[in-house]
Amino acid sequence: MSAARLPTAPLIAYAAPAVALQAMMVPLLLTLPAFYAQDVGLTLATISIAFGIARAWEAFSDPVIGAASDRTGGRWGRRAPWMVAGVPLAVVATWFLLHPPAGAGFAWLLAWLMVFYLGWTMVYIPYQSWGAELSSGFEERSRIAGFREAGSFTGYLLATLVPLVVLVLVQGIAVPTYGQTVQSIGLFFMVALPVGVAWCLWRVPRPARAPGAHIGWSEMFRLLGRNRPFLRLLAAFLFDRLSMGVYFALFPFCLQYVLGLLQAFLVISIVVAIASLAFVPAWVAFAKRLGKHRAYCLANGVTAAGYVAFAFVPSGEMAPLIAVYVLLGLGNAGTMVLPGSMTADTVDYDELRSGAQQAGAHMAFLVFVMKAGLAGGALGLAAAAFVGFESATGPHTAEALDGLRLAIAGLPVLLLVPA
Image (cartoon, rainbow, N blue to C red; front, side, top):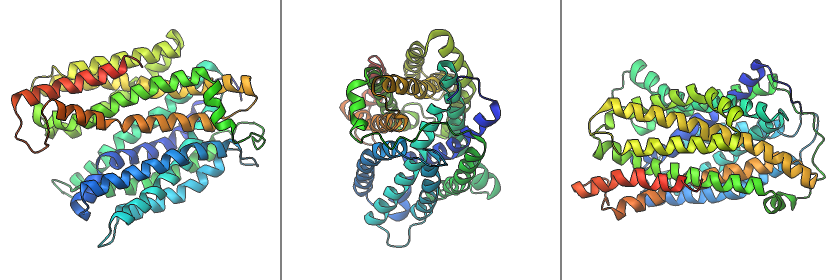
């Protein structure tokens, strides 16, 4: 490990896998369920159960893979072997997941979801852990995280642009189906992931750390009992992601029924991705000037302001909606960059107390909390029902629409207060 400032070229290479990894998360969360419902013919209850079991599988596999990568030795280092092994699993699973045969049902969806999540995790958690080990410099870690999250935001942007370019502009399909959309992004992922991982392995230095095979497996959970700064970060991040999960669940209904701007979905996706990408360097600078934890609080405050502003956007007005999403992009950049950087610092704290360097286990718990928080969209749907918005198809009373507008601002902001 070195506290010296790392050159830009290897940091760009380090960001490359994040482009593919995050691009695939967009259709997995937003489009794949609709594809299996409309094109494959599964019921929403069946799809929900399959995704629920797959998430439970992740709750087991995430910490195991993180801890196992901590205990991997050899000439290729701790992280690279796991990333190399995960790529073919993720790529093959993507193909079968997005090209189900006639008669495919619950078992097909569940099996390939579990294989995909396993492959994706085998790449993602060691990849995140590698970034935590690239430098021992307190401020340099924010810069490393900034490059990585810039890659993530680029992936979000490409997940929006690839279907637009390939399907609409090149093939002339005016309204692509969910299947066409998710398959175009999946093809991009299947090419970009091996290329990005190969570039990362070629250009990014491997930390000169001793193998961690001597670390007992019980240390994976003991760190949760002794690393109070990390627990505090996990708690804040959980509320942060719960807030986002609620917002994600309510946003499509607000956009369509409250604002009457469903046609603006693509524009909004591009705006928030570009804004988030553009503001990453600002948060690296804020972290240096304010301290990481204060900068993270500020990022959550900016995000809360964006949620409140969303509630006051006039129906049918595009310009103020775009302004709100620039503000949300600013906050989103900070809440993505800073937790990873702070986790790397808490790894040092735990190593000082225990003698065990467990970046993989720490990152696995951070990723698990992120996924658990985003699953909090159920809170948003419950809030929608509570205010009278009980059906996506209507009819909707004025009181229900006003309640929905209040819910998308109020509940996420309340969740951000403890964060």
